[in-house]
Length: 207
Length: 181
Image (cartoon, rainbow over all chains, first blue to last red):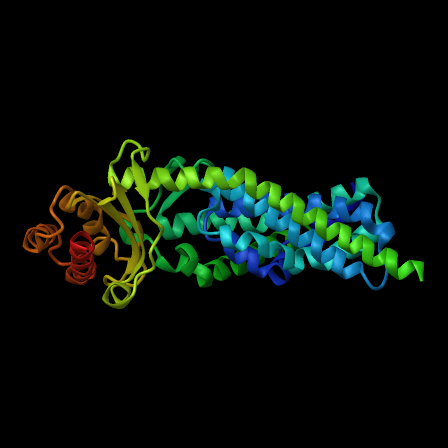
């Protein structure tokens, strides 16, 4: 649990925003995208670190980074192929971005150290902590993007057969295009800034 | 000397294993993606099954068709006669990025599907809701008919209509040329 807490605290909010900006922007466009990106991150971290844990005894100065890159790029591509085939409704708009998780600093910054220093159990909790930290940032922002840009709270069906649920919150006149879809990067960044300020303020008050 | 060899061997084996897993995954997922793609065409062209049809290779447009925003043309043949064509493209209305698909079977517009757009709510976006119905079952060669049908539903959204009309004009010429040839 210590590994989980450490990873969660390190990964939470500002680190996610700074190091994982690319996947954060892709995930923050809607609640469904945020969920899919969180899921993708979880599987990528879990598989990459587990495979690398068993490969670490073969690490040398010459091949270490090449092995890490091969494993991470392959796992990310593998997950993308499966997601596009079996979860088409969840990957709409972000399918091209899924393999980029491999190069995201969110993972690269920790995989090498974690794999070489932690036990397999701790690696799992470390990964889980990172994902929960990332989800804490991206899920509320995805939800707010939907509400402010589309005026709805909605979640797509994994098969792509329409939404699982959709509740209209805002009338058309009050919807803001700067939060809408892939063009809503600026809106996502504004929301991230507000969300981080809110959480930091809350933490400050608790302390 | 043994150490570098082992290092390269591990790297090679890892790369081969990764490639094999990705290749196997592709073999599993490719038929699923093809079936889904075919289903999209069946829905667009309102065909029950592709069993009797010969599906042509996707054609990348050139010239005026490309300028109009068409990105892919997919022909379908019945007894070696061109029977249906599916057009995919992106045009501009009031805003850019109006992504659409159009199906034509036996000269009749079977469906016009808007996949994505950034038209203004209350104006172009509302018009786009009615465009598929306005175009359905009209003859693609009868330009005056579908133009009149579009005008009837697009008061106040001239730019949106103009984008669609430009695309349909280019498709009409292409379709006539393909059928004649």
